[in-house]
Image 1 (cartoon, rainbow, N blue to C red):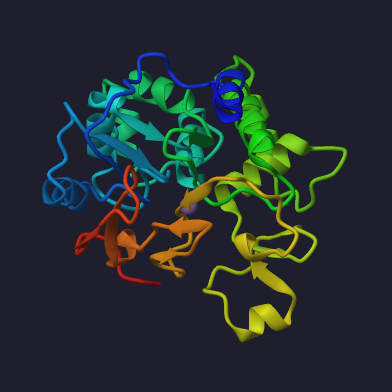
Image 2 (tube, protein in one colour):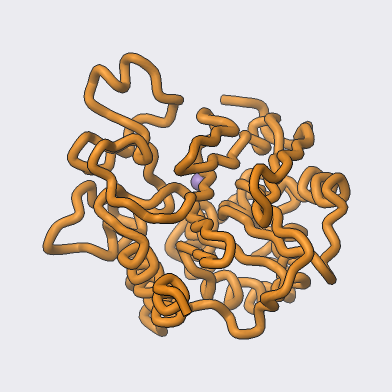
Amino acid sequence: MGIFDSLFRFFGIENNDIEDNYRRIWAIGDIQGCNNTFRELLNKIEFDATQDRLWIAGDLVNRGEGSLEVLEYLYKIKNRINIVLGNHDITLLAVHWGIKKSNQTLDPILQSPNRNQLLEWLRSQPFVHYDPKINYVMVHAGIPPAFDLGMALEYSKRLQQKLQSADAPRWLTKKMLGGVHTFGEKKKNRFAINAFTRMRFCDQEGNLDFDQKGAPNPKTYDSGFYPWFEVKNRKKLGAKVIFGHWSTLGYMENKDVICLDTGCVWQGKMTAKRIDIPDGEIVQVDCPEGAKPL
Ligand SMILES: [Mn+2]
């Protein structure tokens, strides 16, 4: 048993009923309730829920009109998927607990007879998922430069336990109050939830910046902000990161990271990448059902 296997076991947080076998593993980025596009993409990759596995990088719901249908389908195949929570999934939990106001696309979930079953499942999901066999790690926004893989999995586990505790609604209210930009002595959990679900740019010390949403450009670099994965002293993870959240970045791959958010909810594309083999194919479909770009 290798060191990553031991680590994985030590931090093991998966639902025990997730089946480990697979024919192929596909990773998909943000769905945001674009159910028709999601199902079209699954057809195009000939996804077979009896044999294949699916990784989804969070933001399952919100803005797209099929948010309830997406959750219902994912729940149905929950033994074949690994998901991580994104900021919109946290928003849904906040709405469920009465912390935030609902909206048109989340209302059907709240009104569904399956509401509790679906949201109990959602709140049990991790923020970081790692599979040592294929050596990919998945997170919605990113892994902050100050974290190595063990820390990322440890904080994911801490946050997951918080979300599942009876105290979760109160805890989430407090967490929703604002971002913690720096990993320091205090408010470590709040820093971690912000980094895992909302991060894009960091300064060279690894402090988070929540103001800029565009793609990196000469101006962002000049002002000292870098995509989190380009921060020079970023801790080595020893695994390639799959993330979403950054639709203005679009599909992007280098030796360390793959960004899978191709802006489906902004009438962009939805992207699947095969990850169980080296250089797995990339498959995309257009998403006409999304909202018009802002
Ligand atoms: Mn997001």
